[in-house]
Image (cartoon, rainbow, N blue to C red):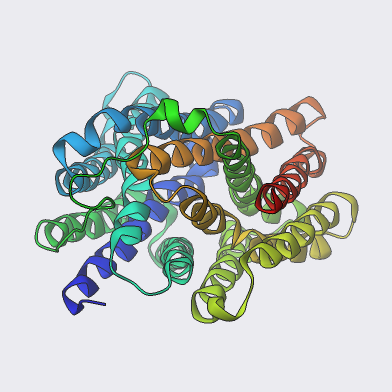
Length: 393
């Protein structure tokens, strides 16, 4: 690979760390928002839904302007929104008439940045002149997990020593990363997905292909399978084990993220020796088993182990679907990656929402909420079977 593109890869890796900050810092503060501002847990759940829902909208709209203004400008806008959103998070809840409204506005701003990052980072890496695209894609997505680990670990240590009441300082610190990466993206080389004179498939052309609908369903299930447990892991640990917030954050989401990142890094290193489809099938079966373990085994320690195993099992799902899509539709272009990101965000929003709604309907029984979400890895497994049939035909 042209060494000048190494900095591009590093910037993309950092871009997914920014994405991890956007998606995982605020969930650490759910109970804090509930206690400090008196916001009901039903509204707290809306912060997850709103974040991913707005990212979903950005995914749709990005198809109309990303190719027009270029990847570089789009990346700069994404990072600027991430920085601004985190700054507003520290200000608006206290100065708005409604603390919840202030949180929603801040979430809206950084969600725009998160949505753009989801659309842009993968195609930029796909366009880089790397030898093994599947390995590069899996390694790229592992940085989301390492970012998730850093968010939980650094934030938890900060809260332990300086107090949760200083969460605003932590938000300012995290805003420095997208600010620095914005400067880096202003300088690095960015290749095009298409050869000169070529155009990617349109949305209509993609929708006309049956296999693309299967890939969209798989992407929804990948996002839902991941976030249905990830977004509730801290709360599950605190409630199930009856431990402090510090132990809950370390035992729940950080364990999940470490194992998810390990699965992606493993495939990123040894991907040329492993069949992607077989790896995804095995991971889907393991994911189903982990969901059943979390929801049906009454021992909370076993349930927490199930959360970790779930992280290991979902690691390959998101990057694996991207790689399969790039192999099936090599001329998919920006539209394909944007629509897949859209599907993934539908899943990221829908998974935790299903868990929250079912849990609320059953007297806050989080285990039953997670049991309901087992449908997502089951559907992903069905999608892999359909992909295999498509290949045979």
